Length: 187
Image (tube, rainbow, N blue to C red; front, side, top):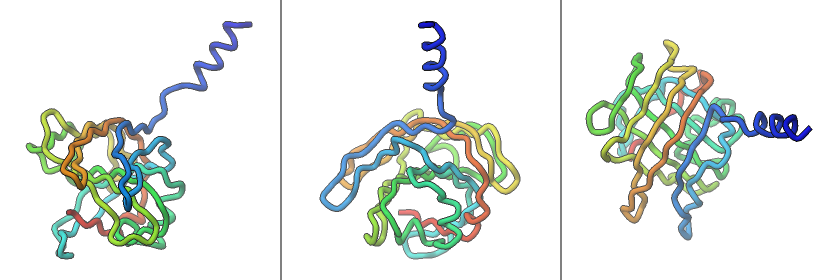
């Protein structure tokens, strides 16, 4: 009987497909940046803009967030990551188009952002990833439209006080066609 109970408990505590470990403390105006429960895991091709709004290219975006139904929300609010309609925390990993592999920060054309957003606060705070030894994004599966990504990551992001914070974990996403209309502003 005890063995059966332990096996049921072990099955219930299995490894989730999506996991984000790491966090950044809150400030007076910025919420805590941690994703204790990944409720949406999506990927697709996005357009990147610089801080002045100039288009700088496209990447595959892998997005993990504590918000349910993110793809549907992006369909009605393509400016979701600049003009937050609700509180959320999002981790955005950006990799080259049509490529899978092991991408190192500082060597390969990758980027990442952690966005701890507060409803109505514009623009949403963005903590960028920085070049740090052994930080990477690994993607072992990807469809032609950037969807259904699977892999892992270990990144270092810098907060508004220039402190470096590690985020690491794994992902298995679903495809989100709404990302084609989303523009992500890079800091």
